[in-house]
Image 1 (cartoon, helix red, strand yellow):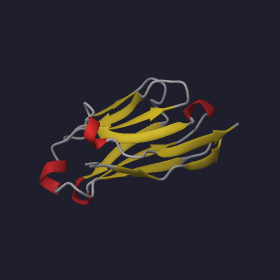
Image 2 (tube, helix red, strand yellow; image 1 turned 180 degrees about the vertical axis):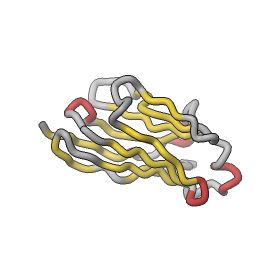
Image 3 (cartoon, one colour; image 1 turned 45 degrees about the vertical axis):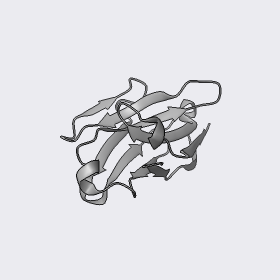
Length: 118
């Protein structure tokens, strides 16, 4: 049973911004809050990669490729995790997923497509 759902993707020009939202409609707050939640992405022909993660204490980690451009945050009361993406590049084009960290097979959602045009 999928626990997480993504939204907010779209088509944007290089240099633009998008904010992705991850929601956990099937989790209760006491289950969501202690979890580390991460954003992953997968582009055609590539393996899924970790983009950023945020721990329950809001400690964050970013992949080198996005550090300084992306910001991950969470709102525990609404069971949401956000990924603010700025200065987008064509190489950021991918399907973006949220999941726990480490990921759980049962928690992969449909993802949200981000396309950056150059």
